[in-house]
Length: 253
Ligand code: SF4
Image (cartoon, rainbow, N blue to C red; front, side, top):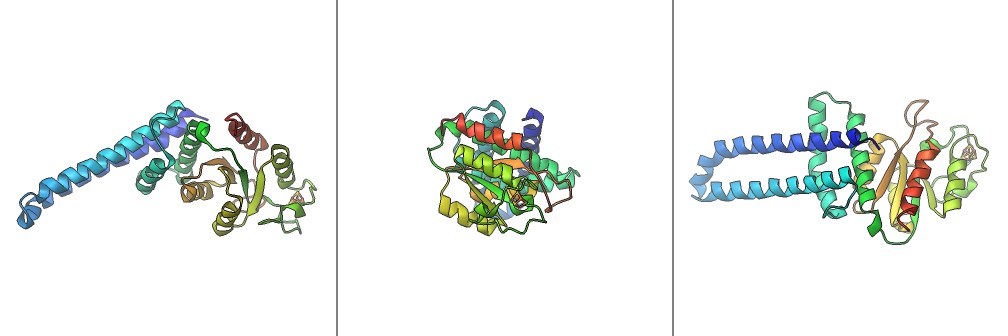
């Protein structure tokens, strides 16, 4: 995983936080006199509360950055990560749009940071089911078999799409495998399988939202490949999926 890829999300998040702090400082300076009209100490109370809020988010971002860049678990929990990411992600996305950055690039960087955080915390994973969650677009559009939800056994293993190879991998490594048509089905399967972690294959957009929806459950994201455009006859590099499986296996899961 490229160090530079992870640094992008962290840098834009840091920049966005500084920008927000400056804007909040200007707003506080401008409305301070009005606030003191309600109550004399109100500007100080609001200022201290805002400073504490920014300090907490900056500390959370610092811990995420240290964990992601060093691969060591630095005083963080998935819940802290979730809270900080939920606050910062919209800011990062907005800032990246303003500066004209490719939105998929910033999402790939977020996924790289997420995977590094999952890696940093993998020694804390409980033993249990690992779920390989696949998007429906991996299935060949010519395939007549219904394989979504719990119907993966309907795959005839013809090799026309990558599903058959993924099924072999899942069986070899004892993984639960599901092909989901969307977030609702994915959430239902997660509720049934109750995995300790998920290896999810999807595009940048679905991985980014899926990772955030699943917090605090660790999700290791593997990007799909789209030789025929989005959402149709996609594929995935099996080496990347095997790397993800080995990654959890090396944690003694
Ligand atoms: S490998 Fe399975 S899912 Fe893919 S086309 Fe063949 S039968 Fe259908």
